[in-house]
Image 1 (cartoon, one colour):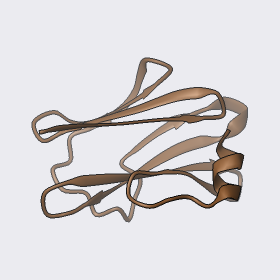
Image 2: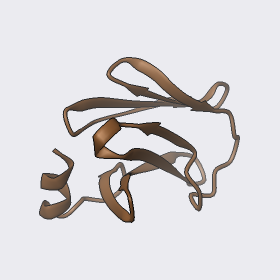
Image 3: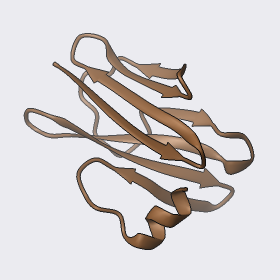
Image 4: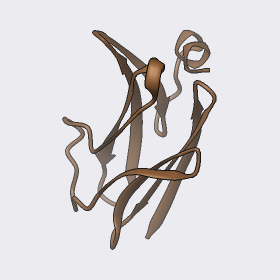
Length: 100
């Protein structure tokens, strides 16, 4: 089963492709920047990450459920950790504005 997640962070098009047989891949502006083939993810540590230059490091945290996987994305810049995407919960307006 394959599931795609697409969103924009600081004018970068981000796409996460997750499948049971091939693992997860992180694409930034169409370029594959990271991949992982872990079968079950706990969500406690980043599964995928990519450097977005002056904006910081984009880290992807998967949340495994019984039959599906959801994703959270955070932008890390120094000591600041900003929630920029969630496939399972709505971000507040401040988080949505800061991601753009």
